[in-house]
Length: 560
Image 1 (tube, one colour):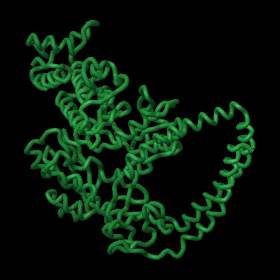
Image 2 (tube, helix red, strand yellow; image 1 turned 60 degrees about the vertical axis):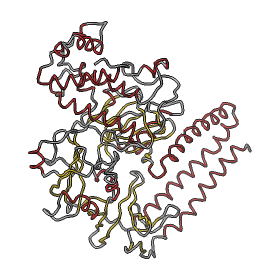
Image 3 (spheres, one colour; image 1 turned 120 degrees about the horizontal axis):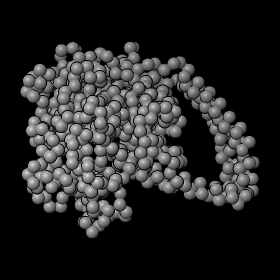
Image 4 (tube, helix red, strand yellow; image 1 turned 60 degrees about the horizontal axis):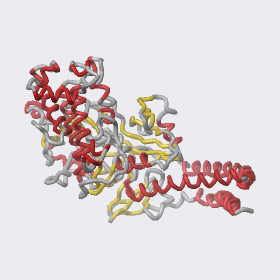
C-alpha cells in the first residue's frame, strides 16, 4: 500500500474511534458544583474556563474567564471582555461593565484619547440581550462644535478628550436615533444602569464603571444531550461516506494525473494556511471572527441582495444572527495565494476609528473568500458627487465635513496606529457613508503596513487607481513612496468632489484635452477662480478652501 493510502486509512480509523470517545461526554453534564471567582459564585448555566482547559459545565455562550480574581465574559471575535459585577440567577440577569470603554478616555493628554466608536449592542449577541431597564448615554464625535443653543438645549457635556467630543443622557436604552441625532456629529449609544432622571452626563465615567444589565435566555434542558446525539449522527454518516470513498481515492492516487492533482492541492492549501497562520500570530486573541462559507451564505440569504461590484468581487447585503446589518464582499476566486485578501484582513483589523470602516469577520475556505463589514446605508461617496439626481447632490457644508472626516481617518492610519498603514487607493468609490453621512475609509486590499518610524517604503510594481495614483508610486524617478502618496490621492479626490459635482458647470466638461485640476489651476492663476464654475458667493469660501487644499496636496511646490 502507498504511503498516501496508509495515511488516509489512518484518518479513517481515527474518525471511527471518535464515536466511542464521545459517548462518556453525554453523561458529563451532571454533578457540576458551583465555583468561585473573587467574591462571585459561578454556577449553571455559567462555568469557569481557561485558555488551556475547557469546562464541561459551562454551556455554550456562558463561559466565564477568571483573571486575577475578576470574572469576565470574553468575546474573542470582538477582542474585548465584559467584567461581571453580579449575577442574578433568579431572574436570569447579570450586571456587567464594559471596562474597555474606559480605556478610550485614559489618554486624555495624548492623541489616543477618543470617545467610543461602536454601539455596545454591536458586541452583544446570543444568548444575551441588553435589558430595557438601562438608560441611554450618547457620545458624539463632531466635525465642529455645535452651536451654543444646541449645546444648552441638548444638555451636552464636553468629554475629557475635548476635540469636539460630547456626551449627553437619554431615556430608556436604544441604539436608534430617537431624536438624538445632531448635524455633523456621529452618535454612539451606551447603556448604563441608573434610575430615570438620575443619570448625569458629567458623571459618564462613573456610570460606565457601575455597569449595565444583561438578560439571558435559559438553555433548554437536555440541550447538551441533543448536541452530542447530533454529533454522533454526523460522525456515523461521515465515517460511512469515508469507507465508501476510500478505495476510490486509493485508485486515483495510483494514477499519475491523480498524484499531480493531490500534490498541487497540498501546495495550494499549505500556502493559504501559512497566510492564515501569519494573520493569527499577528492578532493573537484579537483576530476577527472567522466564518464558514455556509454561514456566510446564510448571512446573505444565499447572496440575494446585491449592493454593487468591483474589480475584486461582489458585495451583498446581509444580516448577522443578532440582527446587525452587514455588507459582505465575496472576492473573485483566487488562483494565487490571496495576498490581497490576507492583507486587507490584517490591515483593517488593526484599526478602531470613527472614520475607518469596521471589519466584523471573514471567510477563508480554499478559493472561497469573503469579508464581512459594517453596513453603510448611504453607499459610497461617488454616488453623490457624480449623480445627476438633484436629491442625491450633497451640500457644500456636508461635502466639507466629509472631506474633514476622511482627513482624520488618514491621519489616524498614518500616525495614530501602532503599525502605520498606507492605503494606496483613496478615491470616492472607497469612501463609504453611514446613515449620518459620516465618511469611513474602506477597501484595504492594496494597503501596506510599516513601522511607525519608517518614513519610506520599498515596493515592487505600481498600485492604485488611474487618476488617483501618486507619481512616485508609478515611477520612482519622482521620489520615494511614503504616506505622502495617500496625501496625493486625497488631493485628487478633493478636486473630484469639487469638479465632479453635476451642479458645477465646468468648461472642462466640453474639452477632451483639459481636465479639471489643470483647468481650475489656470483660472485661479487668472484670479477668476470658482466664478468660472458658477459657484455662488455664499458657498464660494468652502469650495475655494477645498480646491486650494486639493491643489496643495498634488503639487510638489504649492504656488499659492
